[in-house]
Length: 291
View 1 (spheres, one colour):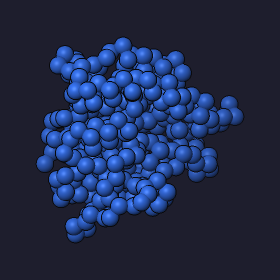
View 2 (cartoon, rainbow, N blue to C red):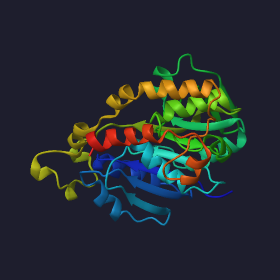
View 3 (cartoon, one colour):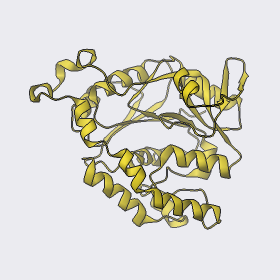
């Protein structure tokens, strides 16, 4: 089996990035890590450049933030056809040491799984109601859940043959992925029973691993204030709802396949329906509001 490609997306919140990237790398598991920065305006990129690990295969910084989907698809375009793809967002702290092994063991044990997410007890208790029966074998298992948070997900390579890329035309990442998988493929989605994560939106400056290198304190601000000032994702999802409705109609009417093309892969655009004007409009939203 080829090593999985892990995509770690960063955008501001340098302190959180430092904490969570350390947790991601704190394992003996092997993988190929792509760290993609969306034009952070704090110390994130400086920190990333300082991190040394032979499993890091790419450090890429976009000079303009065009949104998370644009960054994810860049990494996806570098994936070998046989590689599992694991997406980890920078506000996720992974608490399970052999988390990559557990992702792959679970996917190999249950061939029906197309997408597997990591979770914690809080998510399971408050977001998944009623909690489905655990499907398990040995030390691995999963809860079959239709809508899986996109913060720490593992994708089967055979599924990606069908899905292609994340949807640049609507920009709705996890919601759209789960819809395409559960409605139009033979695969299912679910949460792992053996990989635990912690979702942390902020930390105190005195908890920061790189506080001695912080360049913002002299300006009496923090990396979290920089993040909050430019975070426009809630407004984006509301603004793009009409595109999502039109796209869903095309799918249900059979006017397009579930394969989503990407601007990073010109061949994919040639061979599949791709509303480029929609995608460019989505990218422009973030260019205007999140840089």
